[in-house]
Length: 165
Image (cartoon, rainbow, N blue to C red; front, side, top):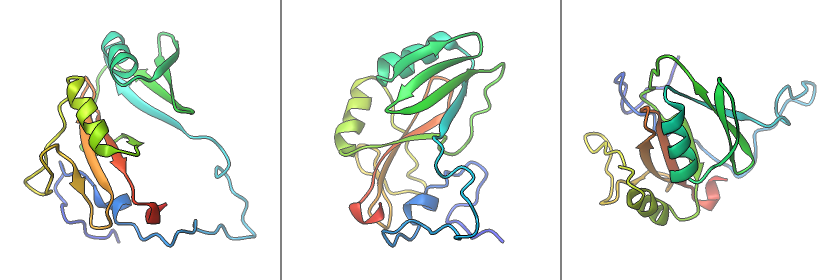
């Protein structure tokens, strides 16, 4: 049975899953008799977009990700060592929750930089208390701000308290 969230509406952002997850400072132990299937493999992130030119401009020029390659299927970016495949799709179905996020050291500076770059930070004040920049502070101290790419994919920047790592 799923835990009840504070917001169970279909268009709700599931903000509290990671932000309020208990953290003992220690990673979860893998049972010693069960080998890790993917625990030592690098993750690849994906986002779907309809317009390659708009996506290239946004992810490369606005956000500053390095474009590694592109073909008729995807734009591939280096997101600080993580491969981000921005896949070209016929129809984007934007999820009502965050699909990509960046952990930052200074969320106030990043929120201001995003705004200066012409990016609108999302407001969810009907169910989240956000500050004047649009930053929400979770009960555990994690701070999050959300924004969308040109195709409506919900992205975020977050600053986590050291005790939560």
